[in-house]
Length: 154
Image 1 (spheres, one colour):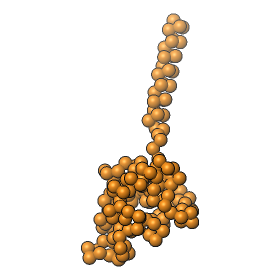
Image 2 (cartoon, helix red, strand yellow):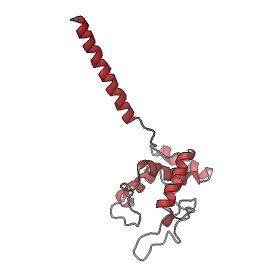
Image 3 (cartoon, rainbow, N blue to C red):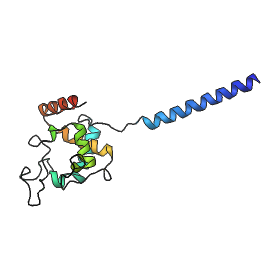
Image 4 (cartoon, rainbow, N blue to C red):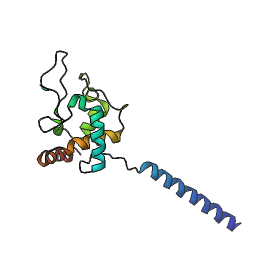
């Protein structure tokens, strides 16, 4: 009887350990949870996604649309640049992610923009990749300023 009980307990323990290992595999992921402008693979992916989904408005060279600070006749602002002349680097990584995923109107109710929310278009990994690509183009002083902002917003 003791042998049967020990075997049963050992079987239950093995099953629990197996389930725990499977659960940790589901939780642990190689998917990014923040941008990494120093990761060549992530920035390369971001460059491709940017070219496909963002460059038509924000410019192939991140230059944005002309007169991006002046409202259009419809009351909306043109797409801003993502280079040092714009204000992308004035936002934390999480703000950039949220604006991209949920749209600016998702952050600022009533705000009208031509930029859609990308939650049903791009994966989180693609959004982080695009942000990584954009940040990889910034000069060291801009990257440091934006990184300080990230630390302050943690």
